[in-house]
Image (cartoon, rainbow, N blue to C red; front, side):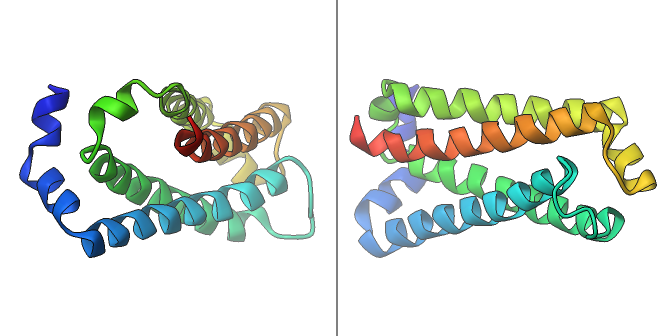
Length: 154
């Protein structure tokens, strides 16, 4: 399957065009910047920092930015994976990044399904569960970013 991925038209196009590869790579970096740049301030606000900032106003905006960044990072990351799938599949840092992103997504789902997010927006402050989810989110997404940077060094 990894060989098939490496020979798809998308993979061939990316391998054949430095400009296209650079554009997808830059888009991946910008997507990650949007994700981290939105989720960390939101997590910090939910954890209790800057309580004067209205959570019901900033929360949905930052959550939407983070979701957009995540979606774009997943798409661009999948495109980049096609260029060297066998190498990435054997890279411990890449596998760690995938695991951390999966845990980040589980945390998002738990946050939403528990009702903690809705309660925080309604009350304007986060309860203990939401604070825990927020701190875990900050750790997981930062760790995923670091694991992604680590890929190139292994």
